Image (tube, rainbow over all chains, first blue to last red):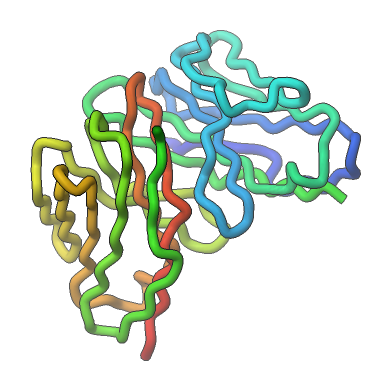
Length: 114
Length: 110
């Protein structure tokens, strides 16, 4: 079974530029999560999708961050414009709706904002 | 409120047992988890426990849950160098929302 795929692996941009991250979840997983992990901290939930609907985006800075999950499969997370404090690893995870929610994570995208 | 607390560091001698502790605040959490993160990698699910259980054992891993005190622990028996990583405690909330702690970095001494 293929795991959660994320790209790019690394991204370096200057502040005020835009950036987008892509995630392909495990096939058949209805729930998709985007987390932000700042160095030395735990993952912070940004947004959670159930199929193509948003379940929770209470911690997403909506003035600059946006995310979509068209057709309930792949997802993109965009930052526009980026700030220095957005430097972090952006992790995508997915889970099925069967049994306890067990998250499977991708390797993440490491973003550096200069 | 939603909060998961863990100590940041733990050093253990190879071959000894490691015990990583966690406290959480939401008494309605259904499942509690332990995830492992190695350098440059995403998080990997190690084990989980249903909130109406108080213990779960899986090979070298033992999870203890004290629901009254909202305290979760992970014991790793016979700690090996490959166990060196960051361990995250997590709780599930309503609608399968998963909240993570800040992680405990486990360092193995020779």
